[in-house]
Length: 538
Image (cartoon, rainbow, N blue to C red; front, side, top):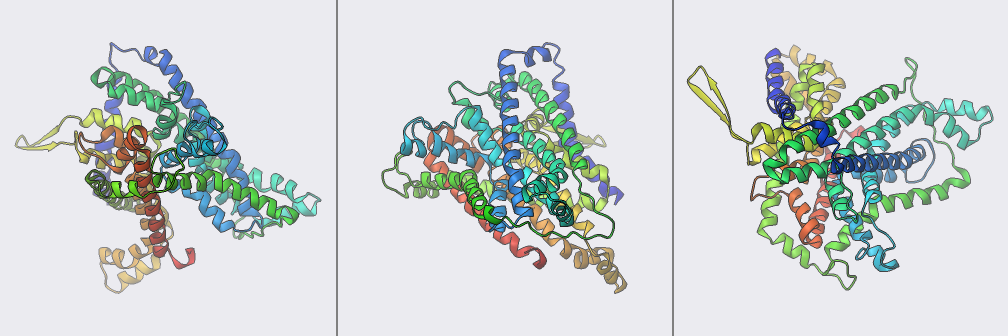
């Protein structure tokens, strides 16, 4: 096991620590002062755009998610399971797809809402639109931890408040909300980090806005496009984004520790939903309207755009975009390439994550989770600097190993795997914590060796958690945008880059077809995952 630990550490050092160290070393260019880059007017504007849009997204997610979690976890709100599924759905969708939906709805000239209500009624471009879309996409980051914290609070505390004379509304705000608030704030910090690291939505809604709304990620992308001349400035700007992410992550960790709801030893949790009385149906209508606006409406807009003969016109429906996309060799190649890369990355994440969890080394688990906390732009830039040229290793002065990742799909596979390794390590560790060790012991007493006992007794118990890690990684990588745009080899496409190109420059109708196909894939994989889930979890 010690050898396995060292091998896993060596892999993480080679593909994460070393590129990050080279990124920091690259920033030591004596001819380039960090302060000159950071204080340049365009850089200050980019930082201001990042802070404003990220704060806006985090505040929006907090304002919407906390009341929804209270209603679903602590009241008799009808259709609570349906609402929970809908508000969790953005976690499985790329934010870029929600952005596409809102462009179709609220483009000031050709958006569907503006066609119905008059030009200029809604304008999704600019800081407000970016904050709204990223807040909607990051809603599950606040909603899910708040819901989990609320589900661990004993209802006897609320009953005591009611006996003391508090109204139902006063009870909700006085008992469960303060207890769940640290978890909600921790999720809000993660939503801020998610928004600050985003690239697709700020590019889609900010670069073409009037006036433009730059962010650090779009600014870094623009510097990289300049080639060698802009690469040093991109490195310095990426370090600014890295410092911002690190500060938010530290705050998030502190809030997460405070957000743990502790129960007395040996005491179970009794959850009795609070009756809503005459507020039952008005609150149901409010939750329904929120679900329609934030999740259902933009996805329907994407579906409608895919069957519009001409984007921005409501004259008839046609399947020409579907037939054109599904018969286009470029689309087929990009789809097969994305599916292969996503399946390979998901397999590696699941297997390597299981290996890390089996070592039982906390330091290795933390190292595996670190890349996910780093903005994708920073990780992609670090890998570009480290592996844009072939790396040679000479062993015993005779054997030479060449690591050729530059301008190849292998670079993208490495980036996908390193970035999402936290999914595999975290899920596997959680699964191992719940394994019944008596089954493994029984297998050993029956004569099975350590390996046979693991495969026959332990591994079947990990099926659900490992399947979840595979599915989440696969869905995240199929249409991944930030890493793909920066690392894709010349002349190759994956679904993320093709979606980005079609929506931003060429054909929104064809982009909508790809987005619809991905949503259908999400639904299919969620169904497959439910089949593999334990019966008690269904």
